[in-house]
Length: 506
Image 1 (cartoon, rainbow, N blue to C red):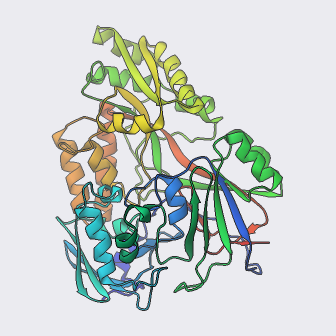
Image 2 (tube, rainbow, N blue to C red):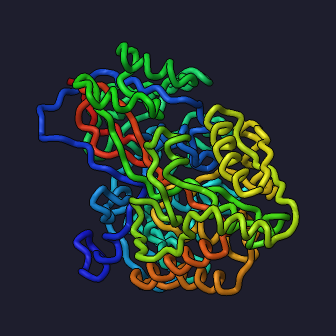
Image 3 (spheres, rainbow, N blue to C red):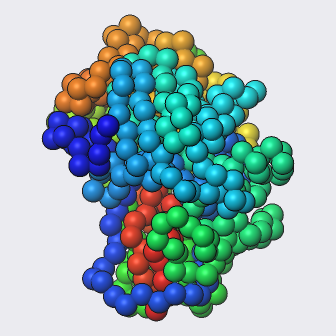
């Protein structure tokens, strides 16, 4: 049975893992104060408050403080216990977890191996399966050994299994609540965390409050209110006037001003993901590598950053964000070269006309217009189609697009996203591209436990994708939030997620 003081080789593997773009934000130790309400304003309401149907930020912002996983990865990139106290790798397809005793869900239901199995059965055996199931890798399910012992089993050897289990989405809900409430449990989650769900007024606010019976260190705040404020300017005014204590997705243009004001704290965290332009490699004219390479070589990432994000976004040349454990000395990024791009278009010999779908927002429209101007310089003509966010996602997953701006989701390991987007036969396959060498690299990176070899595999994957210009990586993803300087003890920020369990108000 492994304790949390792991052997050096295993610590070396785990040390390179970063769950969701963590940044340490805590200052010197200060006297803590209990009580009070923290009000956070954010732009949108979630789909639900259960990772079974919600894996996007608006829902995870809330349930991250209500639900808990077996293990998690801290800001030092090491694995830590949560609802499990230890684990043991039994064989290449099985990991055994010992569960924390005397833990109860908010409704009094005991947390045990049966509860773990319930969540896994619900995720992988329901129709359709849980949204987080597609992010967890080749998981076969959970098997009960005894009341406080459970095995997580994979369908094949899976190198990143521990980082998969450390995802915040692999968190546990009360079986009693789900069986009693049915679909209602999606809006009123019952977990084991430091905060309990109180109410959800659609498109207005969600309220959570301190769990007085929490098994660990109790939260300091009485309650937290997540308010929906769609308009960016209104969110900024709310934090300036004190109507809100914290704003998620602040105005990029106003960050310099807030950095200079001692009444506020600007929080910044490097993400694991990047922003990219996704080409559908099977639709003309993007099915020709010359066209794709020309479009890539026509773009200037620094000028794009200035035009789209006021220069805040840092250029990216591979799929792995600054917070990722994957580090590439050579990622094979094509250089900016307008003359070469023009020559490739000329060599193609046919009109280069295509359409980009973007979200019907000022940011989406601006992104499309900036790209349109770059590509016009080399003789490529792009039409912009603006559609709402709810339509963009199904259009993308049905591959009903020629190209679109997109994001790699922040996960602790690149396997799931790279495999699902680029491996031949994947049900996702957003790239719509097939290459035997790419398949081989993706399969090897998925099954080996050698972290150095996996790093080499992923860098080779980047070089192949860049050479063939399958996708174009634009910006590193960086997360920002602004809080009143009276908000203390905010220890870390995960991809725009906030752990408020240790937060207090001065």
